[in-house]
Image 1 (cartoon, rainbow, N blue to C red):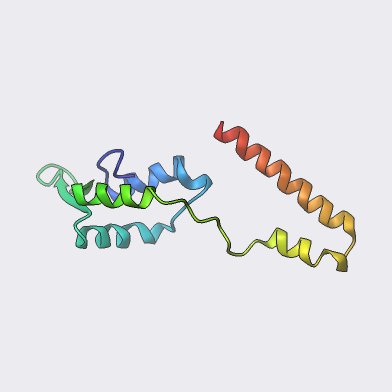
Image 2: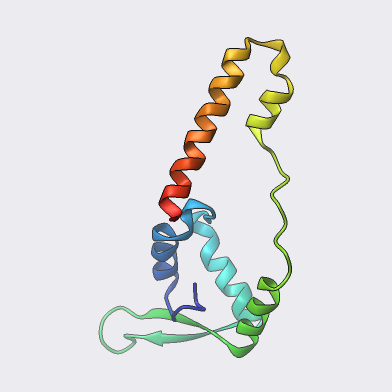
Length: 121
C-alpha cells in the first residue's frame, strides 16, 4: 500500500478494507508489527505528523530499498494456492454422500466465482 502513497497504519488498514480485502486481508493487530519489521529492515521510513498541533501520527513511506524489494517480489510467477480447500476435499470424499449435495456445492462455488469476476471487471 505504501507503494501508492505514504500512510499511517490506520490508513493502510482502511485502504486494504476498500481494495485488497477481496483476496488478501490482515488481522487488525498484524499491520503494526509488519510496519515495525519493514522499518527495522529499512524498507520503509517513518515520520511523525501533527506533533505540535493535535494528535501525533506516524506516517510511513516506502524507501528505495523497499521499492526494489517490491519489484523483486513482483517479478517471479506467483505460487498457486495449494493450501486447504474444503470444496475440493468434499468433492474427493463425495462418493460417500448424495451426489446432489456435491453438485450444489460446486454450483454455489461457480456462482461465487462469477460474482467475483464481475466485481473485478
